[in-house]
Image (tube, rainbow, N blue to C red; front, top):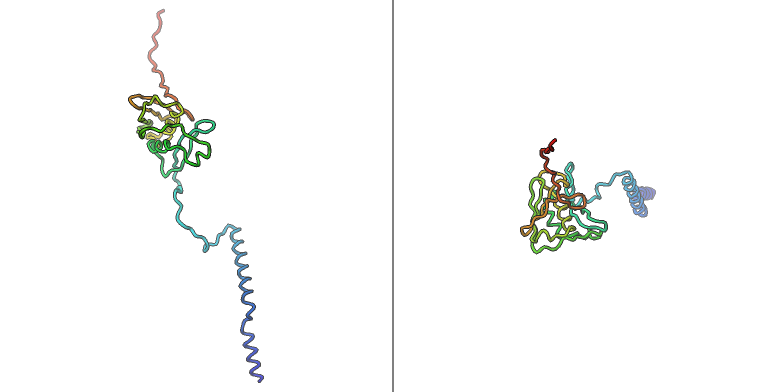
Length: 207
């Protein structure tokens, strides 16, 4: 009888109490939560719960200059460049194609609008060293100054051979045999290119 009692006591002592297991799990879970919050507060993120997902698109590679395109639209206080990100710098033709579509939703929300008319056919832009020629499907003289500003400044700020500053890129508009320009973009307006007057020998008067 004594041996049976001793065996029963040893068995009971070696078996964990049924009520302790859930409590231990709660304590361990709480400690794990506290540890995670402590690591996050120190700038260390638990790597086993991060889902990287798909790689981001359009992210600039280290050391690579940011590519963007500047489209010129009108705001409440005049002509403004709207900068859009691009995978690579756009040439004048690509910039013109975007300009004639008008501002996007975000730009309209900023109060930007376009006065470039709806042309009956696409316009084309060809570029050379430091110069752009825009061919219109209408008489170039029919363009109002506001539309001219948008076209000239957008073309001058595109990728033009020669790597000249936008203010030094000349833009000429032609349409139905009429030529306007060359013009340059002076910040927020287009101006005719002023050619320096040729200097020659000064004829002296008699004396």
